Amino acid sequence: MRHHFGHHGSLLSPNWRVPGLLSPCRGGIMTVTALQTGIHPAVDGGLLLEVTNVSIQTDSIVSITFADPSGGPLPSYVPGSHLVVQYGTGVNAYSLTGSGSAPSEYAISVLQVEDGGGGSVAMHRLSVGDRVQVSRPRSAFAPVSTATHHLLVAAGIGITPILSHARAAAERGIPASVIYVHRRGAGAHVADASELLSRGLTELIECTDRGSFQQVLTEKLTTQELGTHLYVCGPDPFMNTVLDQAREHGWSQARLHSEAFGAAELDEGEPFTVNLVRSGIRLDVPAGVSLLETLEKAGKSIPNMCRKGICGECSLSVLRGTPQHRDLYLSDQEKAANTTMMCCVSRSDDPELELDL
Image (cartoon, rainbow, N blue to C red; front, side, top):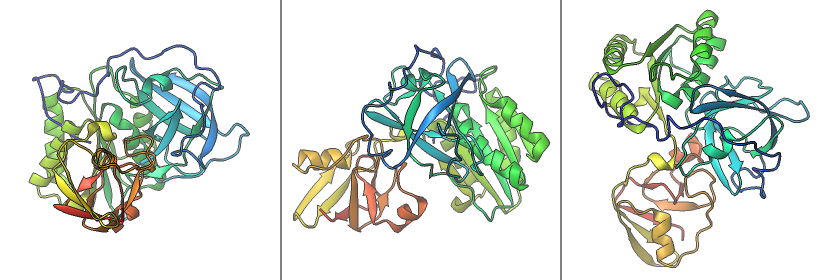
């Protein structure tokens, strides 16, 4: 995720805004098979689930609950995990809001973005009884097990993975504080977060203006014990502001964690060169042009589907160099190994990469 403050007194200014935040919430009625047009590779081997509840959180955010049509239990997941949901021929990832412990249902909340490239409009048209194909949960924003305290910071729809962390911490008796930034009257899951205060959540602070948030953030960043880890989710400019200020106050990178919304939030990146070892070809990848696009222009046919770093179809083997992983598909362990990259969104931390291609 990422950030910047805008006009005084407007906390989620245009620089912080998630596109479509004020767009209408609900569309028409979705049929049982409306989201199914053949199984997408990103959800192949996943689950066919039924919508059991649809509830409005705000004018632009709807919560959707899925369950096994047969009533069976669902796979557990790590707090902060996401679910890939198929809509038509496309897929998109949505953060799960539960604790992940022995779930009988999966719940997500979706911000409608009218002109976005994701499937939020289709998701807002879902109704109880509809069935959708989903992946098994994947972890991209897991809590650190050795942390003595979790400082959880969210803005707007970024509350979804933060709520998952807060619920898990409350269940397990781990100290956790939540700072939630939202426009006045537009906060999603406020009641859910407040309810956690009676179940072990250490603290919940809501901020609806820039000044109060800055005051709270500064106080929290300068008073935490060494074992505290910071987790932040929200628009990119917001996240970057929080993380930058944490670093300025002496927080090590190992204690800072953020959750990305997806490829639409990525910057242009730095240019780099790829050496295709088996082909004997060197290619320059300019800023703002993906590695996948560069390979396609050079006549290389790379399997791909989502072009958003979600489905895993465009995986390539890395022989030398350090990929800059920007996908939502690889696990933390797979990213740390640096032997695989998703060429649709990922780039390079080194001037040159060698690929097994």
